[in-house]
Amino acid sequence: MLRRAWKPIAATAVIGTPAYLYYKSQNSAPQTFDAWIRVRGPSGKSEMATRSFTLLPMKELEARIRENEISETQVRPNGFTWKWTTASLASNDPIEDASASQVVERDDSDPSAPGDYLFFAVMDGHGGFETSRLLSRVLIKSVALELAELIKDSKSSPQTSLLDRVRSLLWLSPSSLSITAPLDANTTRVSQAIEQAFIKLDNELLQTPLRILANNIDQEGWKTKQLPDLSQHPLALTAMLPAISGSCALMAMFDTTHRDLYVACTGDSRAVAGVWEPTRDGKGQWRIEVLSEDQTGRNPSELARVRSEHPKDEEDYVIREGRILGGLEPSRAFGDARYKWPRPVQETLNQVFMVGNDQPMRNPPSLFKTPPYVTARPVVVHRKMSLSSQSGSEITEKSARFLVLATDGLWDQLSNDEVVSLVAGHLSGLKGVVPKSELSNIVPTVSGSAGVEGKNKKNGAKEGSWAFTDDNLSAHLIRNAFGGGDEDAFRRLLSIPSPHSRRYRDDVTVTVVCWEEGNESQAKVVTEKIKSKL
Image (tube, rainbow, N blue to C red; front, side, top):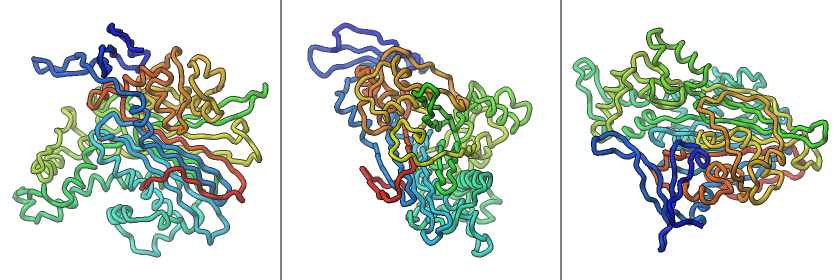
């Protein structure tokens, strides 16, 4: 129950940010609470102040975390059972995150290599939603087409530009993506194909505005520098906004024919797997496998890479306080043309497309000298995943596996260990509220591959409790990232509206994939909720 007196809540224990929340109750509804927010003071400088917000009812907030949830189960013809969930929670308005999934079937006429390719991806946009939304429509299809080229004779058909391919992606149906021959099992070639698909797609984002300009200016215009006003061109904003805004992208691809898993990461979203393995005492434990590295300036390998790509005299500031030129946190991203286009190109395209739309581009960073500073080239990790059938097995059998793909809004709040424990506990049937101090005893974990965290690491609080109340695994993780069993904390955090909520929490998108090999005779598809993914 809320008290009438002001009561400070240490945010480091509740939400992991250097701020404080206050709450109070008036004699009459609605209940309110105060939170620290950043405002512009009389001098024009930014300063902190408290503002009162309405404490929203629990029912409304629970509906919010479940609003975009998806839960799907597919038993594929080759006997693999797949279960995946996705959920998201906005902090920005509109949300800048996105997600996508796709099952690409092999040709039924090729009995030599039965199986599927399953793709799952999350996108973390910044500076707008345009890049992430476009990626949610075309990234997986771009990769699928690039993979298909591994098994096709490139000389058998005329070459088409990637721009034409990307345009066609918007009209492709899932059935048209069927790969008509076995994919080459060479994991190096597959990884390179995924990498090239990412790079080519980003190049198209950056080159499309230049092509439109080139098609609408003659040689005399170039010579005299008389630039046309293309602000009202039908593709002006459609081409420019996905290039100017930016997005991280994290994609997992399962190849069930060769029992391969590929994780491609561009940016600071993270992929973490949980693998059940037996122990000598017969109790068993969950092994934590981190399958990506946070790509920020705080990652030593990223720091070294970025420095190596620029002159020695930029070494001290090319990454400042863990950020590219002191501004952008992820060191790899799609779009973000401010960090990629040369300064004259930015000035030209801004004048041609954006000024007339009253949406001028921000100037390049003050230290901007030798672009590009950011790349969309992903780091691709390959792992063999054991999917051997365990007839009649339960979750405690050796075959249990899951993979969590999430944007950094989740990892800002929860550690890898906590995420694996929360998913494993949910799969084992935990219900209700569980003290944080007890979950590690109920769901024992051990570290496998640790990965590299590219952000300021936050140690999870031992106090408090976790909530096991959501059927959807992704919504379950989101709830526990923002209060868990502490309903007061959950209500306060989710009641703060945009844009003030960004001080306390980021957009969050989570996909959880579970898989096992089952009985082929049970092949069917059960869809609890279907939404268009691409």
